[in-house]
Length: 122
Image (cartoon, rainbow, N blue to C red; front, side, top):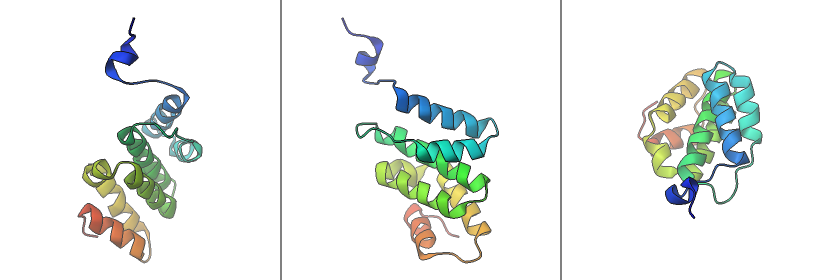
């Protein structure tokens, strides 16, 4: 007999709990916890790219909210690595990039290159 997770091709394990914990911390006003716990989370190799990508987008927003724009950009780069199309098209990525650019004294080649890849002008 198939369970619901078999029918929809999804599983819910400890990585999913960690992803949701990070998202809840971010949305409930605790970006520090979201950034630190989200960055420390080790996602399994077989996790769906869009799920992992959205996680890294959230971690990037969290780092930015606690004043760590370099770590925010690193998280967006992680999102790009696991879910390139989602990362390129997600509105929060563009918003995060704009705030990173506004908070940095100089725009790095990495930031400018990433923004160009997304199609955002800084």
